[in-house]
Image (cartoon, rainbow, N blue to C red; front, side, top):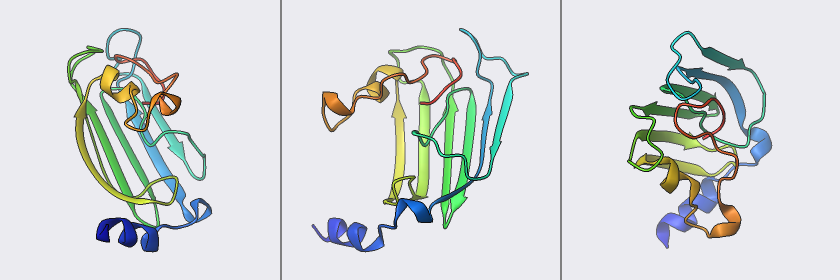
Amino acid sequence: MIFNRLTEKLTLSPRCIVPLIAVQWGCGKGAPDFTHLTVSLGKKRTVSLYYNGVFFLRLMLPFYIGIMIRWSGSTVKKSFLQTHIGWRLSGVPAITFRVQSDKSGFESNKGPEFDNHDQAKGFSCGTK
């Protein structure tokens, strides 16, 4: 209850969140492609905090650092780490540290209507 009140007070308007850079490395078709590097600069809006691949880094203002590391292409075994601290794209502050599989990442804890449809699986390029 105290945490919820604090989160509400610290929540910013999504218009105040400014994406600086997003770097995706190692995504490919079925296997990692280490020649594939995608860098997005500036205010490009996305629907997801993370992109797929072996490594992903996102920096945003006023303060956000997000990192994802993937060590397996398995869609069922826990095969990637997502961690971030700062204000999400929605303006809500968060500290996250989770190890997931594609299956558990697809299933939202908010119910089926919030499932992450169209997310990239394995090492495929796209949003996570």
